[in-house]
Length: 296
Image (tube, rainbow, N blue to C red; front, side, top):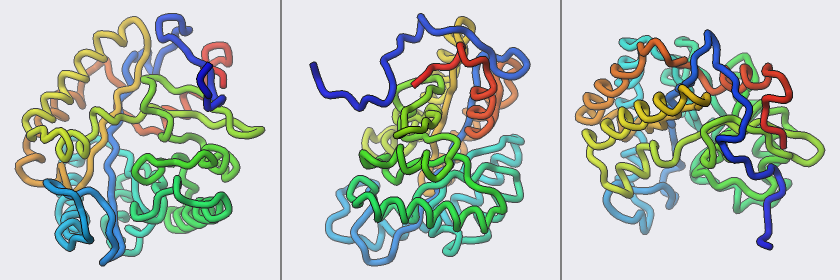
């Protein structure tokens, strides 16, 4: 038998207990906006049309376009659509572009911890280094935002074998690190604790779509609509979470933003959909009867 992570059992969707999202809605939907900042002169981060070897100034500047321009364009769009978003932010952005973070905070958006910088990968860290980094980011965001972050996504989705335990130890309500494998929340064992996994997309994520698969803005927006419509149809039988992941330096580009607006406008006011935040999905799920939840 193959080795297992041992953190949660296999679960087939058709066999699961039924439940509903607030107001009897079957489909929960959230948009996550990734905001990144890298140290200047350090080799890190994917580039749009070539491998980033060696270090590339243009790759660094592409990220900063999101911090200077693209992020603000997306905020205007979300204001227009009256849509709350989860903001997956490196703590370095709090010092590099504090006004952008403050604008999201003022909107009531959820600030989700994403390490110090995507230049650091937790999978490469010794456990004590990672524990100290998690605590540093948690304390920093708590002071800045006035509330402890509820959720965590590891930079580049590269958690170590210790990350889940460390997040539970630090008191996080949920993690997005395990969410790629499901369209419902589920519990994950974390040492003598447990932590909730909330769905997170790898397919409906603009970075692999645009950078690796070379999808156009029109194709990506069509993917959003098709994914939404199909999940809405399937959610009439069982409740699901539709997650959309954006990067400010990718979808904040004018030609992509125009197509993105069309897709989100198609979604946001649908009467059968709960447009919400990851923390609210986690809170609602945790309040369900225990026999409905997927146990670790």
